[in-house]
Amino acid sequence: MVQAGHTMEADEVRIWVLTDNYYDSLRPDSEVSTHYRVGAGECIHAEHGLSYYIEVSTGAGTSRCMFDFGLDGERILDNARLLGLDLGNSGAFVLSHGHFDHWSGAAEILRRVGSPGGLPFYAGVEAFLRRGSLRPGSVEVQDIGQLKRGGLEALGVRPVEVRDPGEILPGIWVTGGIGRETDYETPNPALLVRRGERMEQDDFPGELALFFVLKGKGLVVVSGCAHAGIVNTVRQAQKVSGVRKVHAVIGGFHLINAPADRIRRTIADIRGLAPRHLIPAHCTGFEALTAFSREMPGVFELNTAAAHYRFSALTR
Image (cartoon, rainbow, N blue to C red):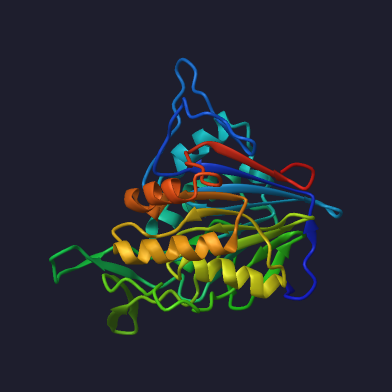
C-alpha cells in the first residue's frame, strides 16, 4: 500500500451497487447512472446491507476492488451475474467497518470467486471485534456478530489492518481512520463493541472509506456507513489528497433516526462542500433522504441496488 502523498488521478471511476436497501426497476437513468431493468424470470436482490464493485481507470491501467459485502453473498453474486460482472477480477477487497450488514456476505463471495495468490483484505482497527446493539427502550445487549480473521484466511485472502491513509491499487485510496472535526457527528450510544471483557460504546476508530481523484473534476468519495460522519469522511479525503473540490459523494450517511438538527447541520455542511453529485444510500434514512432531495435537488440522486455510476473526466 502506497502511503499518502502524490495521488494518482483517475480518468474514469465506475461504481456498481451490488446491493442496497432499495430497488426500483423503473428508476430513470441520469447523466452518471444507469439502472438495471429486470426481465422475465429475473430478480434483483435488495437488503439491509451494502456492497460495491469498483473499477478505476488511470494511466497505469484499470484497478478493480470490492468494497463491503452486504448480508447475503449468494444473492449478491446473482446480482453481479445479472450485471455482467466477474467479482473474481478484483485486485483487493476492502471492508468499511465491522458491522454484519457489511461483511456477512464475504464468506460466500470469497468462496465462490476465489483469491489466487492471497489477495489483500483491507480492514480498519477493531474491524474484527464483536459488536452489539441496544434496541430502543431496552437495556439488554443484542449480539450482532463478529467477523473472524481466521475465517477470512481460510478462504485464501490476506487480512491487512489499515491505520493510515494509502493507495491500495493505482487510483484507489483508503482514508485510514477518519478524523473528527464536526461537533455534531457523534457516536450512537446504542452501538457497542467488546473491548476485552467489556461492552463499550463504539466510536469506530478504524472505519474506512474509499476515495478517488477524478482528473479535472475533484474527489469521488465512497462511504460504507459513515459512522464517523459523512462530513468528517469527505474532509478526511480532502486532507489526505490535498484536493478540495468534491465531484461526487456516494454511500451510507448513517442519519437514520438522527435528530432533525443533525440532519439539518449535515445538509448545510454538505452544501458547503458543493458536490456535483450526491448519492446517499443504505443507512441514510428516509427523513434524511427526503431532506437532501428537497434541499439539494440539483445534485441529489436516489440510489438503488444494481445502479451503475460512471464518473468521467470527459463528462460533467
